[in-house]
Length: 155
Image 1 (cartoon, rainbow, N blue to C red):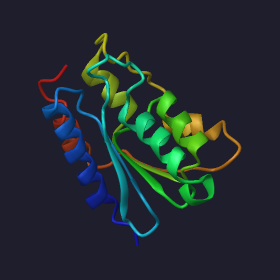
Image 2: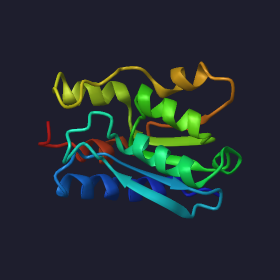
Image 3: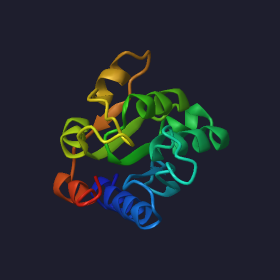
């Protein structure tokens, strides 16, 4: 049985580490069907100010270089915040079968506002996945208070 809360909290620890390392407070991890963590990824905005350096997108690029879609279909992407349209697209193209996230995109937009380093798209990942040709299970928002706390004083 999947331990979504434990793994999502582990993802929050990655996001916290990202902030401590001078990046935006976002983190992602990939777990297999047994709940074994295969990869972790902090936000990668710095040092190059990469606007596409979202933790989920970078993680999905790495994962797709190591694992085939048939394997990833049995895996879960855990994300401290709901994957944006770009990150949801990356998860879809990599072949991930399940996504679990903390803070929702609508809530994220309310927290960040119009910050130039994160002009949040208020587009639910379910909408992005729903436009695809294969199903992706989505669980979230989850542990919202803990996910929101990662952003206190950041934006």
